[in-house]
Length: 473
Image 1: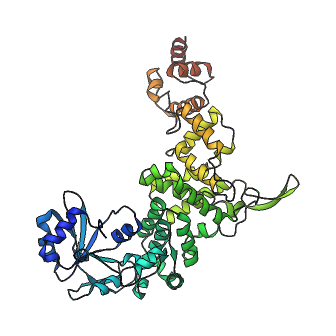
Image 2 (image 1 turned 120 degrees about the horizontal axis):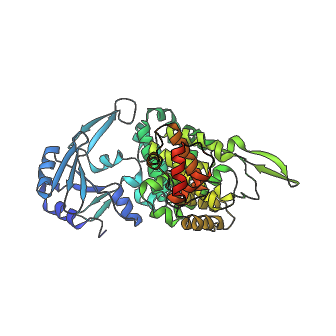
Image 3 (image 1 turned 180 degrees about the vertical axis):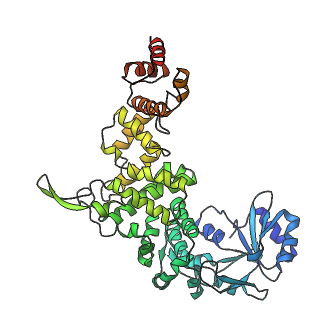
């Protein structure tokens, strides 16, 4: 397993006597075996007290003892930060994610320590001295077979592990073992114990890190925990017109759309918050369909339609975002994407594109194009192609310089005050009308704004009107 341990960490482990019984554990081994970049390194140290561990590590760099109650010492070297932990026995002492009594036990064995971890793929340990992988619960085989399996019955003590399973399935292309799904079903009553911020964290990991997001959504469905997110559950069984959506119901379509988004270079290159925004917007884009879908006769054929589902979906999306405790900054970007995800179906005129950019604030047309593309591509067996409408919309928005932000208003309050107007509601009303006219392309600069004001039949003081006529020539 050459290369699993960074060189600076390897030196710390090799040259520190107190670390003679230390093992790499958890996600860094899982990621290494999958050929993924290793981000977080956790080292479990046996046969030593917390104080002795902190003292031994202090000669190698900065130590942070903020994790004392969990037996964690953070060591920051010149190259990275590593988490060193003392093995412990946790016993359930109350409801909730934090309802545990933590006992540090110097006599605990590596196998006993590994048994308290959530899934077998995270229960692996690596002995750097013997260059040996310790796999007490078949985690390596499960990883090879892409199986998500709980490590022990202790899994049921922490309901957050179910939602961790959701995002693990999506990130690592895993399918849950039947016995793990059965245990998740048995744990359903404990969902109410979870703080909303912890629920949000798992959803945000799903939204920002997924490789195949649909695998997480299917885990949610098969585990029964989809019932706690009724906005998603309602998509199941909601029909779609087979000519336009041959893939099946709205839930199936949403799963394909989320997967399509995860393949887009623009989504991958976005910052973490934007990835979260775009994935949640795709997840929520058809939340309005269950309430608006019905069968009808159109052009002599039986059709399934969902008129106005984008507008109806807005409050439902807001309810879901509140349910997972999404911050306002995230909600303000997701909601206009849901409301406008059908904008490409309208004529792409200059006026329409400028107005769209304004409606999307604080999001933008570049972000909307990700949503439209994912929606269009999520309809197998139809060809997975980039829609022409998105190409046209992006091109027109770029030409108008509104692809990343809406037009800035040309006429400002200070301009009206300089003309002699008095502060008040009338100034605000005029500015709103002026910006509306600017979006419609009636003027582009301040001189044009003055001319527009002079030509419009707006009630202005005589002195102001005279100055406008003079400035407008």
